[in-house]
Image (cartoon, rainbow, N blue to C red; front, side):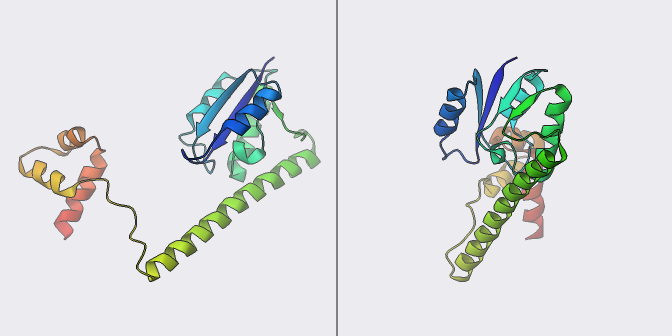
Length: 181
């Protein structure tokens, strides 16, 4: 029976140290750290490792519920998976009772609500910047001219993708866009 911690922030620019310190101070023998969005479980490898590794009698500790998930559906799935394995979550919430489950769900709803508000504010800011002519979007990360040149040399999509270190679907998309122009 061990206590494990999970620390998460959304971007690589953010700092995990205060979460890690808090988790270690509360007895976590191992803390898995992740810099990924909490809006989905997808691509959260450290959480996946913990979910696979935890066993009956272990405890998973997070500093706040929104570190575990920012989607009510994901939060419910994670808690359900942990309970089925006999793993406790270190929060002052007894999810085996109706009131405890409702409270956890409310925390999840507020975490998801906060995410949605942030997205709305971000979109409003982008629209205002576009109206002022300031926002141009992100710079293209794929050199479409290079793709066209390699295609003209007779290389196929797979060879082009491997040479440029990009996905084959990206090559097809660039080639299709070039034909539409």
